[in-house]
Image (spheres, each protein chain N blue to C red):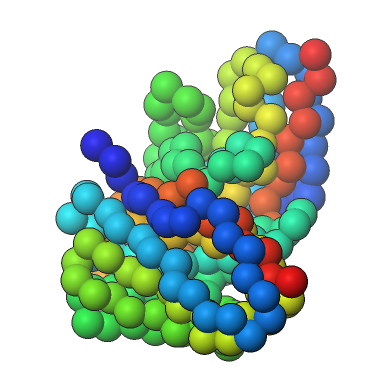
Length: 111
Length: 113
């Protein structure tokens, strides 16, 4: 399985943008990049995914490097509710694949 | 739309007791997963199932068994619980393709004393 590497923790001030990085240097051309987040005492929830192009949705933006070896999840205005652990994972676009998680980035939002 | 439902939400077991964690999804997903999450740690995959009737080991399968009863249900059994199995257990489901989003249950908090 292709692996991802994320910083253990990051801090952000409330209402400022947050850029959460993820390295995936062994990504294959058929892997999708997914981001999930886990709020305290809850199960993970989907945030966004992409293949090659940058993606936007109501929760966040995903910027994918041209060589696809790294990506960045962008929260445009951090709120206290965004304090969570953020996981970057890869999913094979072909058939079935088990989904494994790394340790993620714990985001602290400072009021 | 219930999504992924896990039961029970909390459980305390004595060492050596057995129990089954239940998981059901109503999204017609082929793939289902069981994870455990120890305090301050990430999720580790215990077992997964690509479709009804098939199961495969994940990263930490020892001490667990699973059953994919039908497309909706995927259960996790602890035959002889040990304190090292104290954890929060999450069930998830998804479509099989790479762009498919995974949906998680709210978790079962298990304590083995």
